[in-house]
Image (cartoon, rainbow, N blue to C red; front, side):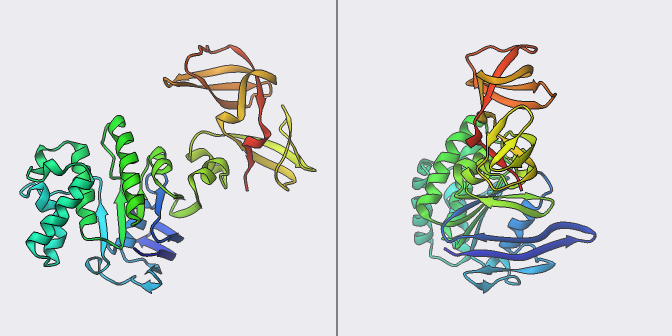
Length: 337
């Protein structure tokens, strides 16, 4: 295992700035998720750690040692990609053992290591099968086993669950998350799926336009987003304009105690669960209804025209134009920087 540090990493492709002064640390044994919109620099950051990209500026260190110009094969990094990139002409066991074969590990030893990992991932019975006969979820596990076989200092996963069905993805993110936590391997997990990152990662880095907007635990990112981008990108938020003074904030439709020292004009992020529907002094009109099974997401317009996002029990029926009474929990709002 290793601490990995990116220090002022910048990567240009001609006139295109893909990564812009990124400072990021993956602590020894932690799973750090990287999320952000397409083109934000997630994969370029991962490839820079792997050694497939050399930064235009800045440096990469493993345990304090500069590896910026060390070739990929000398970094002892395990890789799992979206495509899995398994060899169709090899058995599952041979695929998992391939990295060990390249390191001249004796056949009996590498096959034993492969079988151990396949059992750990609950696919031991597939050892003699060809990858083309496997389901997407099974291939994903084989790819992970192959990456882990070399006992990497750092494990890099780039959108590894894209393309899997929702039910399988939910089960695998729990199983793989538990496995990586048990193995305590330093891991960078790149994904566009926020639920994946929330469920699997110790901390999350949110990227936009090649820059790190915020790094924190899943709870910190969700409950205390640093700015409007993070509030809007991670989960659902309503951004409310208000005026803060003397420990209170006036939102126009409500005055609330404020757990912050802000004063003057402020922007407040309110998650859907900050609102209670069915009681309270705030009047609203339903403008949109999205049924999600166990819950229903509503949009509702307040008297001044501000629209808020609400979440209610899926068993209840709501219609556009319906009038609501709302209250807002001051402890569940957050003043943005």
